Length: 559
Image (tube, rainbow, N blue to C red; front, side, top):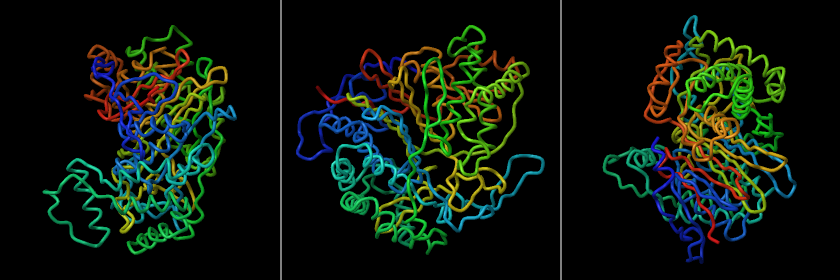
């Protein structure tokens, strides 16, 4: 990682208020892939979303308003990663007024007609590996569960926001009216999905322009801004979605849509270096990220803490990952299907059991075993904080790129593929079931010290999310790295089975040392995931956006 690019030669850019009507003066400052400090700020994968968040703060909105406005902008400008038809979102936040941590589960819900056998698998004898005969679990009408992203955003706006729907959704609506520019591949996909939805043949896809009109999506957003969330779940938008899915062989019903509710949930938490760290409970990935940080803390306390990026530190992370991923993939899912209380998996006695396995792995490294593969990528993470002390960490997703690849005619809405988040094999905690919420990787995290928020983080990029969120906690709270170094530090990816993927910036000596210890290691030019971080320093929030993603931006209000 070229740390010089992150720390920054790029000057501050004045962000003009193109997203809010009637405003012409600069109201925000931004740094793409860099850091800024302020009393309030917004971090997003795209500068346009981050600037909107900062503008909302400048005009008196709180951190919830800012994040929700930025999140709606991302649903328009990042259609491959998320949208108002996205299958899920989850958030963790500090509500300054109540002085408490709050969390939301806006996960997808399987149709009432779903069954554990609806996606037959071809098993590999003597192995945890398997194949599916087709892609119906991840593309097409059967891959769609009731989407929760939109309900989650509007639920938190109602509970914690200070502005109305029209104000926070207005920038996204205007962007949709103007159209968006996509790269060639995404533009081709969008037009192809639109043609397929209309039952038309796609033509001239190789010669398409990159400006995509989004008037139908703008109309849908307008209706939601005016009428509220009910127009999506029980009104004409929801009916249009369900009717289209039924025509294409789907099993979702209008009753499934009408019954959907996001859940206010009790966070799981654990203590790491005098910090109380929180995450949404399962079905999110946060419990596993908290386990990673807590277990690293306990290992490091047994000896002198290893230097960040050293072979010893990396080996700690590898063996911790194998232990917690094996547990995650076999024990976690919809809490109603779990046999243990989620918080119990963060208790001292259980962490001690995991530590015993980790110490054994450190003594005699082995490759581990494959449990449940998952190659999908496609998510957006955002952060926001304000001067009043509100802090929000939020992740939203379609799943893989363009989710189910179903674009509903007349709505401009692409639907996520929540059903592919379930384990297709019957008999697992995360197997398909009617009304169940699938296990997913999103895991926004938040940390308090002495009852006040001092760190918030999250990530995007499939299963790398869980590892990277855990790594940010380790880098900051245990290794003591600054915000910049916490984000730029070379990343490690390992689940239940090696090889371990290490960024090349870790250096050949560390790789050689790990291989000599018996680990299977491959190096990659850059990590496949992205992550952002907020930390509290000297009375201000310091935001560090992902330097590996060129558009990731920190934006702060002017003044």
